[in-house]
Length: 569
Image (tube, rainbow, N blue to C red):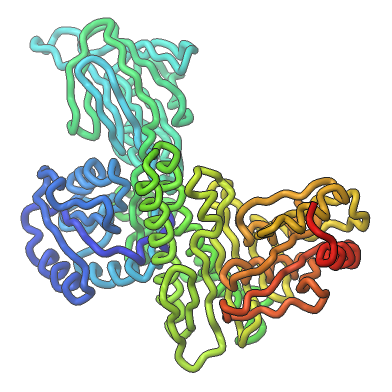
């Protein structure tokens, strides 16, 4: 989950442990001041009565790590991010102190927090079906008579391969988050848990020196078969059962990730384990000379370039954040047969994406104007900068489950597009450009093709109401394709996937970002007469657009001129 998405939060649900009255009062005052709804529930209570899946919700826990784990159990299945406030004693997961609560929430609401995607595990077997974020412990059951056998034997398989027999106190299967708990005391490795999607198998008090921890992918099925009675615990007892001889349980990575909010007011991971677990490779406070300072961009040599570099970063993060709900809703479209219901999903997709982008932009550039297809134009304060946004370009494709849709975000300076970002949620492609600095796809430079023969070229057509472009160019080229997204058309021209693009007429939000990207990749962009294309905010004065790699432009213009006087076939 992208941290920028948190900027649209409009409801908080707090899970509260005893003795948290003071920070809870602080939270209530903060939500009231910011116009955000607040619901509170006690640890262990259900949130169904206060949870609304249509609200942009943030979960908060007040307590120690036990309360935090209850929060994960509650919020992760609902895809709700969680911020942990430490009102306990030795909290390792809940890292915001009560005195920093308001500052951490301010940072979160401005979209400046980060969100760690934490791997969970799932276990099923006789008497148990559970998900956890820390570990599964399978251990011997203490004998009633203290002189009886105190070890257990477990056969372990990884997928179809036999790993071996583990003899000792038992084994732990843990996530990277749980690697600093029981498994660490059993000489297991410390995993850096941020966006680390693995599982580890750690023997507990093994009776063989050569038995070592094993790290596997979350897709691996770890099958564990008991040779005698054993106790199974998930996350310290949040699920528990007693296994008998020849019981088989299966542990694998859970499909649902947990989303943990981290702010600059949290202790960083290695600071936390230094303070709380005695990590002795460093002091809790890092000397200034050990800190890595952010280096200024090489191109940031003027106020304008500083603005554009910052704008590019914000636009990329906003686009990727808006892509998350689009992917989620797009996945629902194909299963819906009622036209009205599909329309509701498309409307919701447009609304959610637009709200994320415009909120993020306003938070970072409150003085800039915003011009979006889906929302009222917001005037800036004495500025030449205007953001031009299409939160869902290719609505028809989206409504039919087609992956060819995109998010388009541009910054216009005094009427001229100077920064562009186009994001393709279904393929995770990110096209970017700043005027004068080149164009990029996923960080790699792109440029147009150099083909100069029309019969060797692939063309893309946008809106072509009477089929004029298709009929006059299909036989003259290697084909004319129509994708249904003007922003994507220009990006594919820029990256060499097509040699030319035609749009009968255009809206500013459709092409503002694509214009910057195509031009910076070397494209020639004109109207149908060959005059330079004039970008305009006036939607009543829509202009035709012809884009090419440059080498083909004269041939394209010649055929377009013929099409005006020659009837379509």
